[in-house]
Structure formats: C-alpha cells, structure tokens
Image (tube, rainbow, N blue to C red; front, side, top):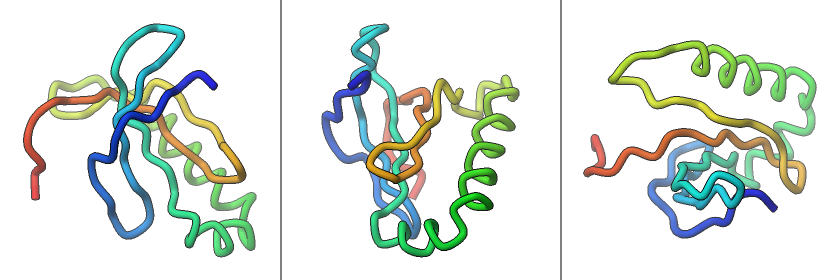
Amino acid sequence: GRYRIRGRVARGGMATVYTATDERLERTVAVKIIHPTQAPEARARIANFVARFTDEAKTIARLTHPNVVAVYDQGTHAGLPYLVMEYVRGRTLR
C-alpha cells in the first residue's frame, strides 16, 4: 500500500521496472518486480532466491556514487520480491 504504480519503464529477462509514487514520502521512485513467470522457479528455491535478492538490495544500498541509483526499500508483494530504487529521469541506456 505504500507504493502506487504509475507506469512501466522497462522489461528485462527476470524483472520489470515501473515508476511509482512513494505515498509516504510523496516522491517518484522506480520499483523492480520479479516476473510472475520467474516466481515458480523462485518459489522452488525461495530461501536462496530471496536471500540473494535481499543481499543485492543491501549491497546496492551501501553504495553512494553518482552513477549508481540508490536503493530505498525491498520486500515481497503477492509472493514476488521487489526493490524500490531512486528514479532517474532520462532515456534508456539501451
């Protein structure tokens, strides 16, 4: 309930990134959500998968560099892991 999805930014092999509004802090963020098609595989190895996803969030959250987006939050919704990150306006790097 904290994040309101506004639109899709990009879709990759394992996850989709959306723009969202952080309702509590009233700011635009990027939310990276694992694809539901990856969920059965993730659930089969859920402990390991979530641990790696959480470790990624913690590692990125410790980084402070102008070329690395900040990670604000992580969690699961409907059984799917997600990361909440700084939203940087601009064109895709593709």
